[in-house]
Length: 336
Image (cartoon, rainbow, N blue to C red; front, top):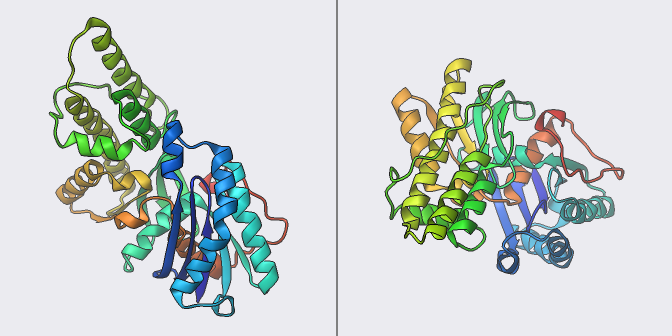
């Protein structure tokens, strides 16, 4: 079964053709990073306009690269939530028109479910149930993956997402957008024990995250040093900051796995490409004998292949959308 998938939730216009949820026949991504870099972050209006300009060509290229025509496609899958509403609307509108024009079933896919499904592409042997840490620019979730289409969110950030925190700290250190990769690179040059940043203590859910305090601590450190005219080693700050975030993510993930009895662990989302996070969680899983699954780097960030993977499982479970499908800016994974 071949799924044509479309992803436009933020600043990547993407289309892919995926077979049986695990085999990627094509995966095309038109990035807008260079343009948004001028503003230090994604400008929603610009993102929406670029999606409208790029989406037709990206879909055509995905079909051509896969060796397929619309006659070969069994269903059209599209990200409908969550994300930037204008950006989502471009993808949803195009997918609805395409499905209607070619009389193909339409499948609405949740963006976070797509990130989780990226692991099915990189690890065809992976099957639910398992525990997944989702870390991206807009989300930090701990998710019980009960089945391919059933999820339970057991922990989430109370404020900033991990990726958002990386970008804001990178900006404070003077690195361009997107900042996460610069923190990752710079941290290899510094002393990760040079600075002690806070590990927030949260009441209520023991699996929830909080990153705003760490971000504020870094900003205050940099501002105080600048006002006093004291030199500061940015590599040490980057390394210490990254270590703190990695420790918190790994600690919460391991706690949940132990308490809930999971030995199959997955990581997903754009920030799962961070080498510090991958290394820390790999070491913690190895200590405990857990099996760890992480997507290939090319499937960590926003892409349509992951939407095609999840779209396949949504399709076979009987999920369908019609012409009334609309984009949704905010929607819990448990509400799909």
